[in-house]
Amino acid sequence: MHVYEDSLRSLCAGHFPGDPIVPGAHILGLIVDVARSMGARGAALAIESCGFRTPLRPDGEVMVRARLDASNKIRGTVSHRGGGRPIASARMRWLDTPHVFTPRARASGAPVLDSRAVFQHLRHREPALLIEREFAASPPGQARERWFATPPRGRWFWTQALDAAAQAAGLCLRGDLEGARPGAPVLVVAYERVAVANERPAGALAIVVRLRRRVINIRQFDVGVETEDRAPVMTGRVSLALVEGP
Image (tube, rainbow, N blue to C red; front, side, top):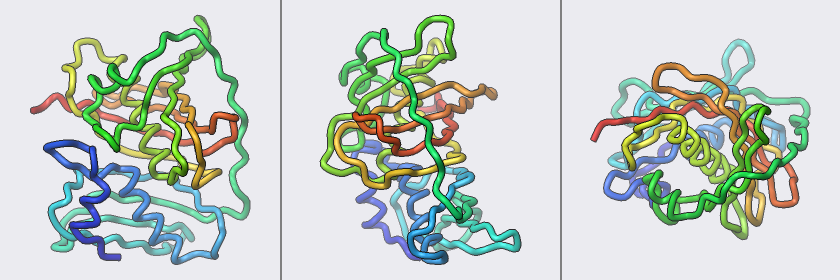
């Protein structure tokens, strides 16, 4: 699949002003679109991993490719039309049955994080700023969880819900690193084990984030997304890196 510059720019609105970068969730979405053309209509697709080698800026045409390998898994890549190393690569597989999601209990007690605080910590601007507030956290002594909420929308695409989860994890990463420069970019390094239960939820979304592990300047988080009435939307892992350069 060819993706032209104008289409890439439409994915970058508000992400980020002055230095547009195509969101990693939307890059993954392009690979999934191609992969789905290779499988049975309506089959469940599990995204095992998607890694990003370099940010994708909307300054030219890209090629999205997918192939079925000998192990019956789908492997996809995104690269510039002129060639070179892939910008992103993903591994997926078809499922006989969809994932089963376990409802999550929400704990309360955290102070509200309003949109002004989010604005200060993330470079996203409207319409790409998807996190509105933090509304809960786990009680002391339990595994650390933080809950965030989005503004309501008439309809979400699953890639937007995944991008919102990455933004929520970005807020947790900044809180985990003392002395991080305000406004320093946070980039998605990889998505793993992404399973989608509802591709187009509506209303406000609730996002839970739990720190999984630390490796140098990279933090890996488990994330879960559900609707206001606690219907599951997706689960997955996101790895983020704080970039302290200009």
